[in-house]
Image (cartoon, rainbow, N blue to C red; front, side, top):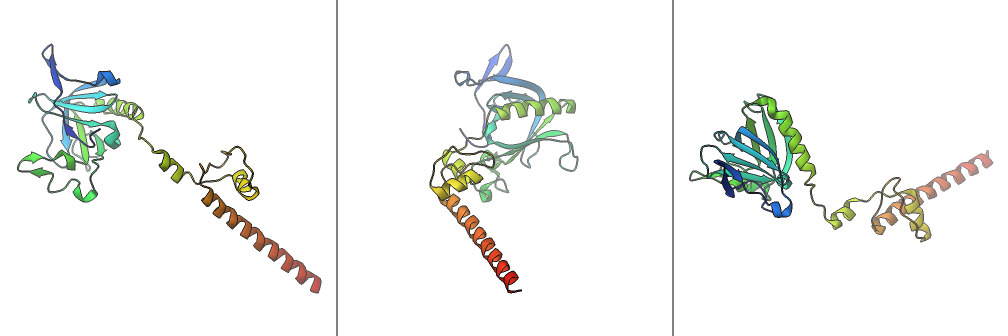
Length: 225
C-alpha cells in the first residue's frame, strides 16, 4: 500500500464514460459514484469538478475536463473524515479528511508542496471533497464511514501486548501464589506482562503492610491509655 494521496492513472473508457479500474481480484468493489465533486488538496485551489468513486478500499477522484487526471487515497491512509459546514473553516460545505503520508511532520505539507508547478502529493496531509449539491454531504459521509469500517487499522501483536497492561484482582493473586488460572476480563488482561503484574502486586503488598503497621500502632496507644 502506498501511503498518502497518489496519482491515479488506471482509467478505462466504458460506453463513453471514463471509469477507474478496481482490484476486483482482491475483492475491491465500487460502493458509490458521485458526479460534480471538486477536490481540494491541502491549501491549493480547488480542481475543476470531477466524479468521485468510493470503493471498499479507496477514494478515487477523476477529472471531467482532463480525462488523464485523477487522484486516489486508500482508506487506511485516511486518519480522520468529517462533514465541514463552517464557512470559517472553508468557503463551501465539504467532506474534510486528514491524510497520513508516512513522512515526518517536518516533511509534511508546507511551502515545498509544490515545486516548479508540480504538486508534491507526498506532502499533502489534508483533502476536501466539495460536492456541487451540499445536500449530498450526509450520504457521502455515511459511505465514508461504512468503507472505513471495512478497513480497520492493522494492529501488531506486540503492540497489543505492550498496551494491554491492566490487571484483574485474580491475576494479582495468582502472581502472589504462583498458581495458574484462567485470565479474568473483569478489569483487563495482561497478555503475559508478568513483570508489570509483579510490580503492581508489590505495591499492593506494601500498602497492606503499612495498614497492618498502623493498626498495631493504634492498638499499642490504646493499651497505654
